[in-house]
Length: 366
Image 1 (cartoon, rainbow, N blue to C red):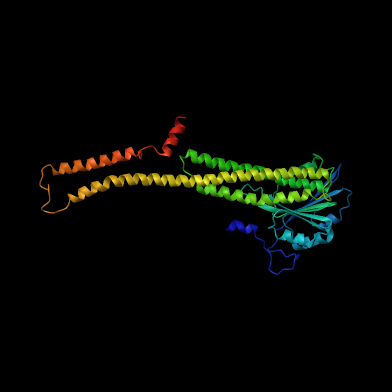
Image 2: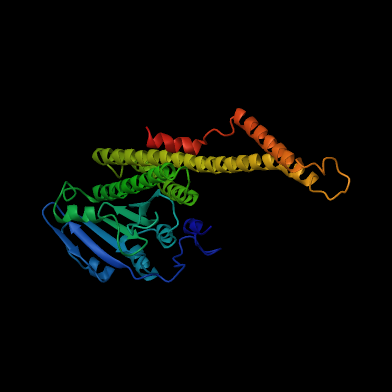
């Protein structure tokens, strides 16, 4: 299926590990720089990494963000200037990684699936973080829009303690912002499922199986993105050399957010599965009622047809064929058979109101 293509690793067979080979032509990426300290900050849109390296600033934290995957030459320059490992840069060029944490000497490499903000069906882009005591580099998979504007606003307006802390605190804040963005998406999916359930009731039991299937598909994709993040955040909490006690407290809060999102998704998935089973049961119940109705009609008319067929045969010598009242007697016999079978069906309860009619009456007269 097409949705699985986003999770397949596109990598040349037999390539050297750590080789930087862009699988497709790189889309233009933009670079932004935040350099800040407790009292001031600098926000720039550098045209190249050379311009960043020539910037002399005594500000303790530098945050370089690439909006879109840079080309191979830029990544090689990152490797040369900031000492990033080629294996981590190779993962950046192949954005099909699940959430993970890897240490490469003085740099910590973190991969997170970041929800896209385009407002369509749920999808994610890879957010790669390179954490060093002196800098933080983030590389987003797609240009144009992310969920990190709240972090930029906090830096610009000195909200919270982000300007007083180092690059590790900034990385924790970015991780927390990414996780928080899953909550409105999960709540929106839950509201969609609730609307489907209400629609089944409002439409007298008519299910929308395609809507249920689409909701289950998005829940599965979201859970596939969130589930590995629990292990990644747990691994970050155990890295005492990178994060002090205060940072680990915030990471513990982030882990709680991951668990809450997973609980919401699991609950919604169970409800969606129940709705799918309910829709199938409703379809089978409707088919059973139609079959019962047609069976009653066929059962009533088969003996009547038999009587009419017998007396419709063109034999010259047939009993009662010349009776003056034969026609009326045959009609009376047919009526008696129909009434007898109808009485039998009534005694068996086949004429009781269906579950759908009963449900409509209950809604009209609660």
